[in-house]
Amino acid sequence: LWVDFSSDVITIEKTGAVGTIWLDRPDKYNALSEPVWLAIPEALKSLEADADIRSIIVAGRGKHFCVGIDLVQSGMGTHQRPAGESEAVANLKQLQGTSKFQASISSLAECPLPVIAVVHGHCLGAGIDMITACDIRIAAADSNFSVRETRIGLVADVGTLQRLPKILNAGHVAELAYSAKDINAARAEKIGLVNDVYETFDAAYAEGMALATIIAANPPMAVRGTKFMLQQGETLTTEQSLLMNGMFTMITSLKSNDLQESMHAFAERRPPVYTGT
Image (cartoon, rainbow, N blue to C red; front, side):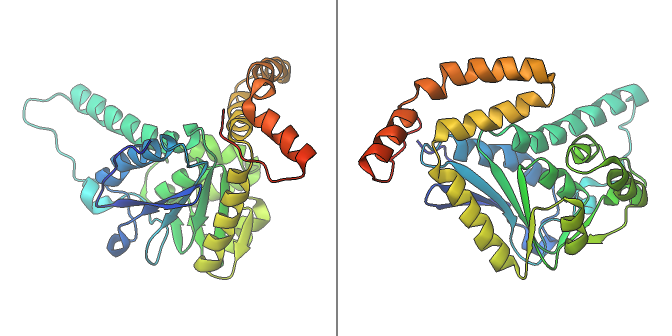
């Protein structure tokens, strides 16, 4: 089943069992305009609904992965209240807008399929929000990263301050968030922001595709279940997570056709063919 998706700012490419979501505003260095924000969850839904897709890559067309929020399109710093509208109403509208953007980024974290970010060039501000919501991050050697909001007088409010502490230790988080300085790919790899660094974007994307393909070759129910447990474990105690893990495995993967196929394929010395059922 393929859910129709069409956008001028995001494109989808399917390679076997891997779907790539391309940020596709190369002339604007993939700055996140409102249409981009709104298209991200829809692109994910389209891929999630395709039974053939089992892992996802997020990457950017052109020179840079993402330079952050489109400041020109957003009118940042030039907002004026309509005549007669109270500051309270204006603030509520602003909060609603922020919540919409937060939900867009959270859709990456909430996606039941593994999501790999492949970064090149600038990854700034909201770009950090995006990659911290992904499961795995791979970078080209020309990448640079910055929690840029602090430098322009903002508090990052779309996910970085919530998710970066789950990736890096507190000292590195504080350094990046307080200073808003740029770090290169080598430093990002050293502190654990990215898994690996490759010489070029093409090499990084090829490695991302190779990893996504390996993931996609595993039993789909087991992969989805593993991501589900990692997600749940963020808010549960170890004891609660262990109990849920045992129950979840008992009622899903232990009873799946995929497990039976894996056992039969092993016994028959042939490659397994998984259906995700």
